[in-house]
Amino acid sequence: MSLIEAQKISKVYRLGDIDLRALDHISSTIEKSEFVAIMGQSGSGKSTFMNILGCLDTPTDGHYFLDGIDTGRLSRDDLAEIRNKKLGFVFQGFNLLSRTSALENVELPMLYNGFAAHERRDRARQALKNVGLEGREDHHPNQLSGGQQQRVAIARALVNEAPIILADEPTGNLDTRTSQEIMELFVRLNQESGITVILVTHEHDIAAYGKRIIRFSDGRIITDEAVI
Amino acid sequence: MINLPSTFKISFRALRVNKMRSGLTMLGIIIGVGAVIAMVAVGAGATQQIAAQISSMGSNLLIVLPGATTSGGVRMGAGTQPTLTMADAEAILRECPAVEAVAPTHSGTAQIVFSHMNWSTAILGTTPSMLDIREWRLTAGRSFTSQDVKSATKVALLGQTVVDNLFGDQDPVGHAIRIKNLPFTVVGVLAPKGQDARGHDQDDTIMIPITTAQKKLFGAQFPGMVRVITVKAKNAEDLEAAEQQITELLRQRHRMGQKQENDFTVRNLTQLMQAREESTRVMTLLLGAIASVSLLVGGIGIMNIMLVSVTERTREIGIRMAIGAKTWDIRLQFIIEALTLSLIGGIIGTIAGVATSAIISSASGWPIVVSPLSIVLAFGFSGFIGIFFGFYPAYKASLLNPIDALRYE
Ligand SMILES: Nc1ncnc2c1ncn2[C@@H]1O[C@H](COP(=O)(O)OP(=O)(O)OP(=O)(O)O)[C@@H](O)[C@H]1O
Ligand SMILES: [Mg+2]
Image (cartoon, rainbow over all chains, first blue to last red; front, side):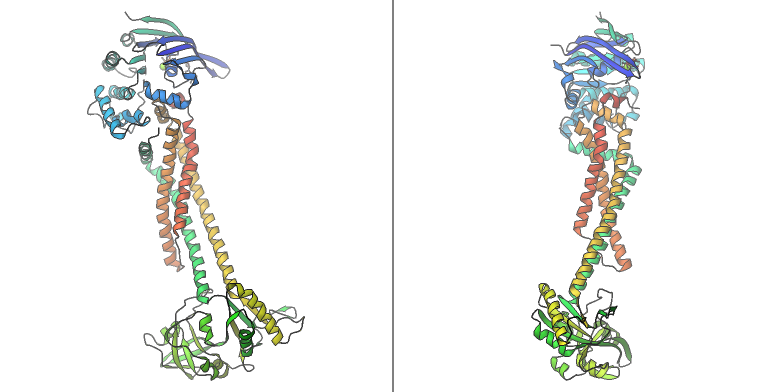
């Protein structure tokens, strides 16, 4: 049983009279502890696919099995629990809560699964330390650089010990130097903790951090190969 | 699993970010709760005042007035023709089983003089049983007696207002006053009763034996003439029986034919006052109901703001959903926000309502009763409003699709 198994997933958006097929019968499997980079030109369906893998969106057609469970059969709250426990998100735009400190942003996922306040605090501190943000706990997002904000987002994705991290263009808003640091962080998480990393990127040198590259074009997978 | 303390914290923070808006929204609830409490306090004060007047009047009272209410088809005021006598009063006490006490009165207004002070007041000629019927106690001296009535003695009981105006701090008992130039001895002072139902000062009065009033002060068109007979029934259930017995007895005594109209009128004072008390109670309810409308409007204000807040924070909701917030986590967050607004509004409104009541009371002199029940009700109602009007926006927020909420600009 694979960790992630997509079976003929399609996503169709209806725009007026036209059907827009953002994903066209995508089938793929990803195993535990893989490091996968997804590439493809703009509008090819990468984000759509990531959102479905992240249980933020549902396919129009096909099945998505996560840990052997058909997510199409789950309720809203079941999916929320999966997002909380099994999936960590990192977005291009960081998606941190403004007016909320770094520490509290990292505590957020634990708010929804019953950790005691002091335990939340300790774990959030530890997670921030892991991404190299010790001493920045009380900074608000607008007091942090883009790279630091993305580290907060990564800490937030890690804090519940999710086995899968989904990152949609995590370095899209960052300069080369910072991008490399963020990617090294992902590599370390993948190698040391065995966390499955799936990330979308436009840049070859970013994709080169992965061990496997899946290429999208017009809602289909055109190549899927290991990085040598 | 829902984490209440954290949810509270999130809600408080959201409210603090929009201080001005939260304040204005609360204002609606503050005005609503304040109005309910103040209005109910005014109404309850009026009700209590009437109840106090009823008890100061004495209980289970009927009054018999001379003259018909109608005469040959023309309505006449009661008391227009003198038809009642001392003998009627004695007969009522003797022959009506439902009657406990009777006090005939003959009254007028006169000038009273004590040394160089003078005062004009109502002189009530009556019998000692008047004090029992009206439950009127003495603060000094003694009452006059049946013997005083028999021999038309010139003795007087003074009301507190009269004492204040003629004697100041002096003890009036034993002193001589002049009423219409006749010397009277003050034998006692009546305990203060305050205003009656019409706002009339009940302490601005002097009581003397009825015979003295008839023979020496005001005269009588015929011997033993009485202006009013006050009757106390044995108890509240006997009031109607007493009314009937008195009517039958007086018709008989006045030799009235089958078709003839009564030449007297019997009024049930207690019933009259109870009707007023009832209508005041209805007024209180009405005032409260009107004030509740403003509370309702305040609640709609909360709903309005919460809907705006949900729309504004769609992205925040999306982020929370993406990291695992469940339906009720999101709902509770917004319900608690609404509840916090309405409860803080409720607390401030309660304080404002009590303060307003106190101001109304001191400015108008009306008695005001802030009942704990009205506070509990207004408070409970504002909490209910918070949940009720907060639920829809919260429900709306919880149904958002995570990805749509995240993409919302
Ligand atoms: N909510 C939506 N409604 C309608 N069409 C949509 C919606 N979301 C995506 N699409 C369409 O689906 C297609 C795939 O979009 P997607 O965002 O997955 O592309 P992408 O590969 O992530 O592109 P980029 O590299 O620019 O981020 C695009 O044509 C896009 O216009
Ligand atoms: Mg994209």
